[in-house]
Amino acid sequence: MDESLPTTDAQAPGEQTRLRILDAAERLFAERTYDRTSVRDITEAAGANQAAVNYHFGGKDLLYRAVFDRLLAQLREQRIAKIAGAMREGDPTLESLLRAFATAFLEPLIDGADGMRRVVQLMSREMVAPHLPAEVFIKELADPVLRAMLEAMGRVRSGASEGAARLCVLSMVGQLVQLVRMRQMLMDVEQAVVPVSDVGVLVDHVVRFSVAGFEACLGGGESS
Amino acid sequence: MDESLPTTDAQAPGEQTRLRILDAAERLFAERTYDRTSVRDITEAAGANQAAVNYHFGGKDLLYRAVFDRLLAQLREQRIAKIAGAMREGDPTLESLLRAFATAFLEPLIDGADGMRRVVQLMSREMVAPHLPAEVFIKELADPVLRAMLEAMGRVRSGASEGAARLCVLSMVGQLVQLVRMRQMLMDVEQAVVPVSDVGVLVDHVVRFSVAGFEACLGGGESS
Image (tube, rainbow over all chains, first blue to last red; front, side, top):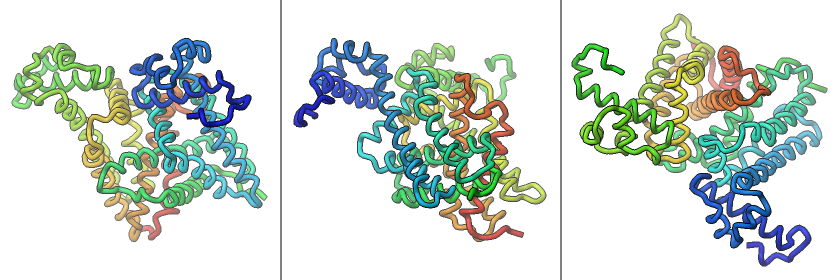
């Protein structure tokens, strides 16, 4: 798929092979599960040979880890960038911060193309049949994003208890994950329990609900 | 395991066999997934013969459905009973209603014995590799509990918009599911991101956060 692109330093032949293997592995692990995907399946799909998997990644388990490292880095950078963006605006408030967070979280997962549906599938499979230690998710995604949120919240809301703030962020993440899950479920069901068509409506709801929830739980006062 | 109980009409030999098969199937489907569990595995664990599965259930797929029917009925009845209990109390409020709901949801999943850990495992497996139509979960669990909540909310809070109320209940369920998931994840991780030891703290947080969220989103006014 990259063949038509000009070869740059970042896309030297070896690097192209590495990326093709990574892309094929991501797709196959998502579609078939870890156990039902062989190194041969991946190299066939990637047009590479089995030695290339060992050369670039060191084996199937480390390739799986590399797939998640790339994925978690993408999600982490997207979310942290949105939080930073909200804080650079003229007069950041609790509401503008939470809106940026909800948008960063929902938009790619709901409106994304096949790629993001794959992310959800891959993450769910890993949750049920884990092949990676839970620390990976905490360290590569949950913790850095939580730290960015707590730091930003300290600026829009001084004197808030950090323990309460952590639980509040968790309350918000739970709502967002549930909306993604329900939406996928309800797309198969004719009778729509919730309005699922409009991401904007969902973001508005989560932001309004959560601003009130944060206010009630955080303590402290509005900064500046 | 039921052999020591006196045989009543409800536990005639055939009924005992049916229950033993159901119990064994629940355990094995949760431990090994649907695909990796054979009818033979189940009948061996249940001390029954394969004909009994066909006689009582009509095959592996209908046995799987029967396992979920029993499970979803249990969860549904527990939750609806707690909601009804809260509404029978002297002066039900939005807070007492949401507290009853959070407790009904978290307590069995967090403090339950192996049985409830199995429920979580079984539900997660089904979510990732569905063998049942999504309608089953909507019809047997989500919808009836949602209806009970909306009816109760109409009594503690008149004039609330039903669309907003649905989204609010979803916001609460999302928080609760996320807490169960994070707690399981964090039990493996030394560094605890949130205080996970005390169910009471978690219930208090979700109730405080959600009462404020409902108030902000529902519209209408306090009843009576």
